[in-house]
Image 1 (cartoon, rainbow, N blue to C red):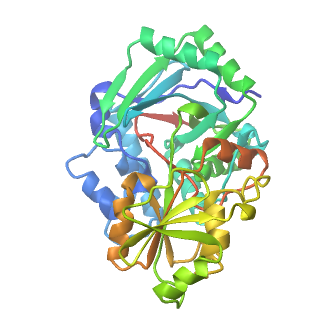
Image 2 (tube, one colour):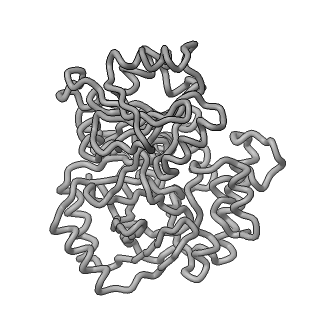
Image 3 (cartoon, helix red, strand yellow):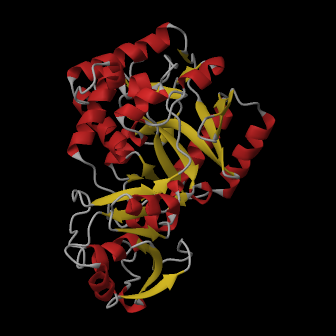
Length: 409
């Protein structure tokens, strides 16, 4: 079974793209989503965050939410805002942000490849979020949120795709309000499709960058519906990028208290494991195994003793693991960062000023980290291991509502 295949995409009509396209559902809360859709009745957030159209305070998991999502999705199709292609295609999706571009392939990805471990994961999923995405997919009968995947770079494929986009005009060229340019092409030629599908299959594996819950949910829908039922539920909607074009940002940490220590005792405690040097300004680590720390209105640069870094362990050598193993747990008493309410996570896209703001607002200490690399992510996935929670933050984000994969033929 090949990793990817073309499909009849449900595409936004180009002149409606700015009205429909929306950020992914999980980067905002309900109130933020309500504000985002003000004056935008066709925003895809009405599908991905349907609680915004229901009474305030309703549970995100109420049956009414999934029913409303289906109604809103059907309306986008009935009004012609989104139209299904007549033929099976692949799609190219280029994002340009902060002076960098990444060119991805939008395709249907085989669920069986995910079950067989050819679509590799690097983090655990939460049952409640899996349940939510499963019910959402089932309700709207579609995979509407793309899974962000990476593959090991193939220079020949890169050259082919770049040349192809230079020779063909995009069907969508959207400058979104997130300062990202979103360009979209339809690849309909059979020879071009076969070349792309074959090149991706030769990579051997895909790696989930963002979308573990969507992958797991798609697999559950496929297994529940069974292979004998008609439809496209044996695939899910993914966008694949070469690993060398994909940028990972730092994912920083903020802790609400010092676990009963005062600032002096805390600095003494971490000094047993880290070199702690005051800094005149904010510290953005420029290499692995170093950290920035903001406490008491001051920045410090931390460097862990190199003897404590196990270079042979793809997980334990990660900075997010080193910080957890040698500071968060033994000093601050945070043994389960996935569930401990004392710790919060801040995407690096928000800048170091956000860490200072959080501490000024009452948090005790904040840590800035060096970004986890794509090579480290793939090494962890290849080893069949998982990263600590909140290890990677990817930017730019894919937009919902440009393309969706219907499960019914």
